[in-house]
Image (tube, rainbow, N blue to C red; front, side, top):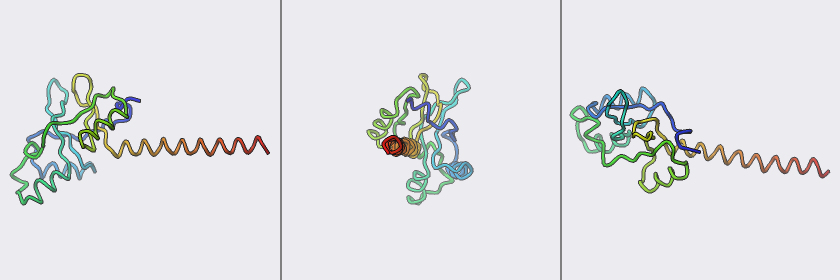
Length: 149
């Protein structure tokens, strides 16, 4: 299964010039802990970074920096990890582990934003798959018991 089939396509975005307090308000308004920082081009969005609630807590609040003087671009760190929507789930998990990230924007072949996938999404999918397998075991036992009375 391709990661594009399970990613969340409703991504809360911000541009790099957005003030940090406004970013926090967006997170609260949309009940998310992550904003994908994008550049707009050709009427589409290209992801260039991620800002999390943890970034705000650690880089701004804990550091004693005034949030009003910062933008999301100021606290977006490092090279952004992304995955193509055609990547498999296992490959995506392996990539996330190798990069040490819990969430990645999902992009098309042109690098345009199509969604986001998080560790929580993947754990939920795995839990559903494990539940289905457990049901299969139970159903097999029931079928055998019914046919071999």
